[in-house]
Image (cartoon, rainbow, N blue to C red; front, side, top):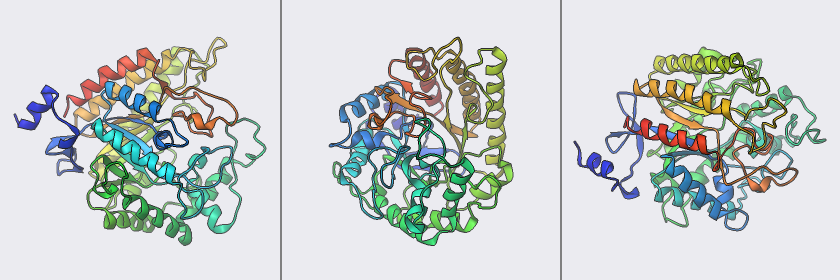
Length: 431
């Protein structure tokens, strides 16, 4: 047994022994010659909480400590948010105007990475967003083309600023792929982030092994009829640009592998030399495969079967192009039957726990077979609790355009926390 493994078993491996994670010839992730399993959470709000002036650093630290107790070693966080405040966006963003940065927010990202380093956690750094809740593609398009973002219905309900259809929004966002000025603006942001020197550690991000990977964007996708795809030229350009700035870290798209677009789109988009791994997301309620107000076993079993079948499909797709895959987003609402409010943190989440148990057994099986490389559930809300109206600065795992309390897991969700602790230990034993 290697000395590293002995020390790890004894619990004496510190953050100082961390290294950059890479993909090796067998298709697995490795850190310091040891297989690296992703046992993670989505925690997009980290940068906002880490901001000294407008955040909540004590909550950030408490949340990180709680997640560490769950054996979580990987957090997917945003490293880009853009534009003026609107009803479907956080109150504070990193880049309020093109090329102009909120230093307090940047220090929030610095502080997050500094605290994660102490706990030997790694960060998936999401550099953009197809969706509106952090600004994202649509904000760049709006800046360059001087258009109003066509906000679709979301939260709060009946928002007079959100009167467009989802198709209208998606088409607007997908204009980004062929908007050269938009892409140039984004490249400047990518360069700024990669070259950022952390004020707490003194390290540039490109040299920081706390960072797991650079992710293009949250769920970059083509528009619904396929007429505005994420082009091969776009993927080659951005992935090559990131690698030219930083040869230490992996790169991925962050795509859903949505069944609506299917196998061929997944293969084309992910089969590029500068993309190191692939991802899949599954949203059974959003995709009309689960109804939280239906308490029947058949309803839940259908959701479980649907999810497992799609996991197996995407496992095959990833094998086809010989790239690792992470189950990067999934979740389920609380029980919504018998008059219960599925957004209330006090409402039971019995179906959610059954769902997690069933699908994480499958993810474990696929990870043990060295096809999948682990998971990041959506999302950890920790000490946060839902608030209404303009109180979006309280920051949950549920982003601002969604109803607060939809998918977040709280620090007091004891049954779920205990289960995730148990499964985390089991997953990490595969290393």
